[in-house]
Image 1 (spheres, rainbow, N blue to C red):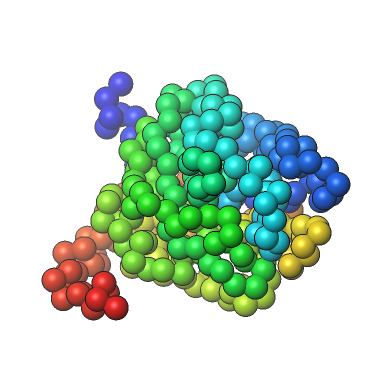
Image 2: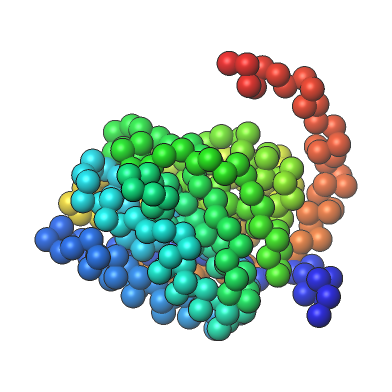
Length: 294
């Protein structure tokens, strides 16, 4: 089958938002991770039954968002990419002919960790990974304790169904990387996140539609749900959504429930929007020296 036959104008995409089922610090890290993985597996099967061709999971999907504490205990949650969880997802991807974006806590070497996402193609092949570039260090989000800033740039992965980019959580506050993903050919950018009600909630439906419009691509924004003990930093408010290149939210989840959000993305809209708004033609990189001078 030729690439043009496989890569049609419409692709069915899915997002999974899910609450941590085992808020019990007396349990081992491995037990907590296994509970979260076990909870995700039927949701992934649900996505497959709904015909999802590209699926993205939430930030560090197989565990809680442990960054409100600074504890070496959670270093045990890191694994290599590729590694055991990636390999399991490769089997699932192959079974369902589904592209899967798998956000994980990555162990690059002893003592070096990244907040990453593996990208697996519909034939089960591992295409590569994105490492979160922008790492916050503020109250309740002590991420520099756990993650080194990403070193791999802004890769775009040519999957069977579309060109996929990844931008993780705090990255969404930075327009520079979002533009890089567009320049590198992304049709769809997924932003797996863990964000709670409060300071930045009003930005949730502002920044990512703006990225979609400014760069002429689709964005899939994922947030987990519920509260997580023992940290209780706030409620993860869900509302995962897809937004099109015109900035319109076309599918959205609730604030409270484990859900699979599904949307059919018409890739021809990317051409329509870019033919109208010639941002890539009219940009002036030679005039942007200030962006890197300070």
